Image (cartoon, rainbow, N blue to C red):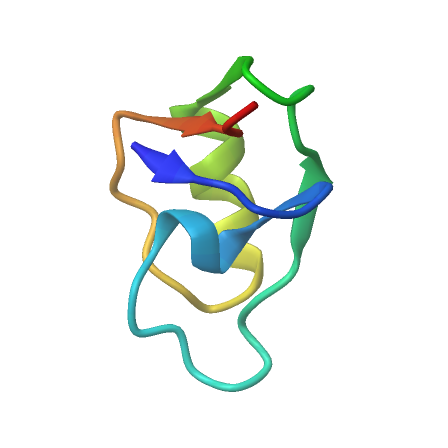
Length: 65
């Protein structure tokens, strides 16, 4: 699970070791205290477009209240 601190979810919130230019915004972060599940197909497609890995089952992001 990724813990978010800002208003956007980035590819780097889900993957370590991205190269320069591979990171990007995926979408808005959940409201504080809420969770967001991003489907594997979406993560894989975005990661592949950016030249990064695309092998997660799903990504779960949490933004503390």
